[in-house]
Image (cartoon, rainbow, N blue to C red; front, top):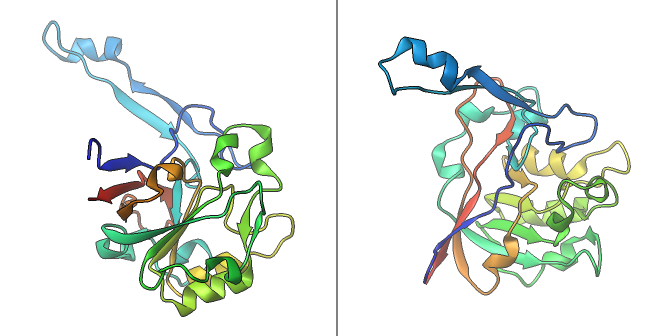
Length: 221
């Protein structure tokens, strides 16, 4: 197998809008290469970056603290919940439907797995269309995932919940049962027909419930 690692994260860059209403990241030099030269011998320079960013930026993971005041934050989640999770891909193209129910998940091997939902919506990333009328899971789909004790659920859409209203039943159900959520995935089409191991590791922040990840899949021969 030529490349067994598949990158499932979007690039985060200065000015990127991930979620309308939230500010874009500001990525710049704290110490530029030119300014650093005065601290080092001739021919040596360094860059130290500065990032001003909300935690819901790019491809990110949600843990219980994102939804619940007393839920576990990123620093309290064990590594085994982020890495080397046996994965299952479920393809439900947005061209056929955007409302994903429990019935759509049945018949797939999801028990104790990281379940990734491939809708194809990532093709609209960083466009106006991405933010509205996107694919989402229903409450009964979330209940079915809980019943099957999935480890994590990911989707290549703007949100795993329907954002047309104010309720967020999927976040409430999954995070309330310590099931992590990864949103804004991409490149899921590369996993079709493959068994894979999924990983998405955030920094170990205290008091933070969401943060960008470098999500990836390792294809299994």
